[in-house]
Image (cartoon, rainbow, N blue to C red; front, side, top):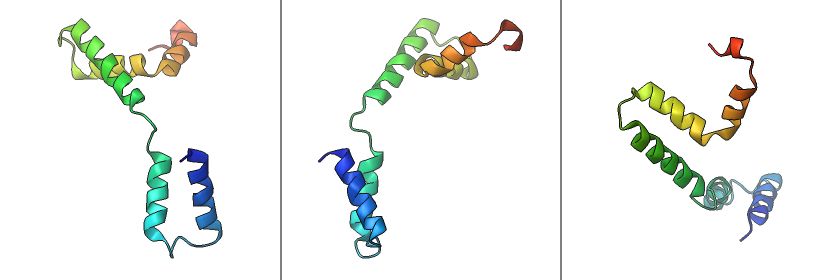
Length: 90
């Protein structure tokens, strides 16, 4: 089943006020819409964390480790930080 079909089903249930008639179907539709099709993003996150931890040999504090993981996982944040002038990076 395609996600756009599920979204259309959700819209139909909502527009026709059938949510109270089919509450379990509505819950299922919401779950299908919100669950990712694959776990690749979670796997990438754990892979990045594994690389960071093995590189740092568990010698860094938890706050620094979390910050490095965030930078490794979220490339858009890294790009934003690179574009800032050096004086604002305090």
